[in-house]
Image 1 (cartoon, rainbow, N blue to C red):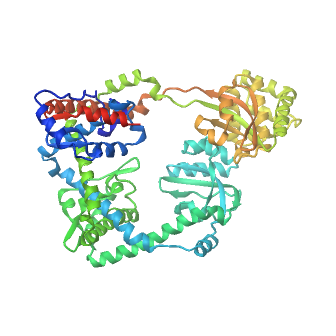
Image 2 (cartoon, helix red, strand yellow):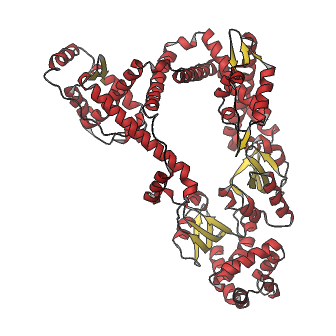
Image 3 (cartoon, rainbow, N blue to C red):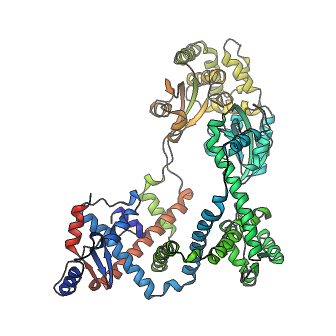
Length: 639
């Protein structure tokens, strides 16, 4: 099956188009003669029972396909490929009607969701958005009065627990560099590899409300307290700041102001509808829902809770002519249904407002205005119903599949090693400067300092061989700047432990000494934000190319221990010492087990659905007719 077949959610061999048989000839001749007066777009291409599939149907279907689903065939073969999907669609929908699937609770519930969505969108476009506007002077005033011109370059430490955040803050208070603490404690793997540094400048306009005021009250160089955020806790450091012009920020200002005004207009409009339809919240039921949610069992970042039949049937909201039960309200809100952040009563109230109250009131008003009966809305709902029916038929056809066993998952894991690879990584000490000549001078200095660092190399070798403490490095004189840098690291117990580990793991004392020299120079000269605190040490992956440019490729191809550069990127020049590399490895089975299970379940569903569809085709073989002449003609016209 060619790739466009994913439209039906399965992969199966395309059956050859049916040729005209002698027995079908009189019927087909009648249809062809009857179609002679048709417009070109109305030429029949296939027939399924009494239903004709015309060239217009075909062109509409093909026009709606995403590019990645396009058939790779050409000419009439491409036409037959697409046409088979239209035939399959007709057969599936006919089977759904025969089985009265559209009357099932699941299909009706999905249609209600689709109706609320479509009518709500129409109401929004007609009665809310047109009432909102903003003038140029108003935009400029908002930009100035809200302080949106100030932009911050920040680093952060993100943790999922307060205990870990407090440990990170305690480490910072001992004087350790922010980047080092971020490397060790932050649970944001992407930014932790870069000393916690975030890639962009941020203004109040795009900072989340939970941290906005605290963050923008800090001066450059300051470190924040522990700040609660939606998924955990963060500590920030202000690395740099700059001032943006109104012209630079105008698109963001317009978006933010329009969003706020839309929210205010929507709130006013919904309040008026609530009064019109006598919307009421049943306080006792809301209290009951709060108790149920709070008493749920915590599983990761979710809570598992249960509604009894009596609870689910209790009215949570009433309105003129109807009510919404507690169970229905929960089912409409994805976050509540999944138990996400439900210990926060304010969040639960906002979810219910967004997912239950607003859509229901817009639907009530839309029905009162007759919007749900408009031809465009009715046509959309009819097409949506077909999509829902096809999904439901697929579910029914695959409902009895066997569970995936661990043995099957391990067999798949062993048979597809390339599918579960980790990314290649190279650890470097990078020094980024503004001039190419400066970069070359620093390369020369690293090599010259390495020649002068014989005492350091010898002492590293002795410590490694005899197990002496790393504190012996404090006896080095101050002839080289790297000695002072090492003494500063050794003055901190955690820093001293890291130096000891580096020496124990070093393959060559000379190479480690050169790494220390490069790191000391990075701490002094590098212009990359956060580099001085991390002393230039980075773990680079291919996905870091936007930030590090061609240095990634050069570092990936270089030998461990090499000095490379200068490499230019965005007008700046980088040199680097290659410290370590990790080849792409294999993810442990335990980490990918859920993904494998999903893949195997999906494959099994595709197979079962394909088998069911083959049976459906075979049963309807005598009712399916392909008009070969029209197909060939269309294939010749196709680009």
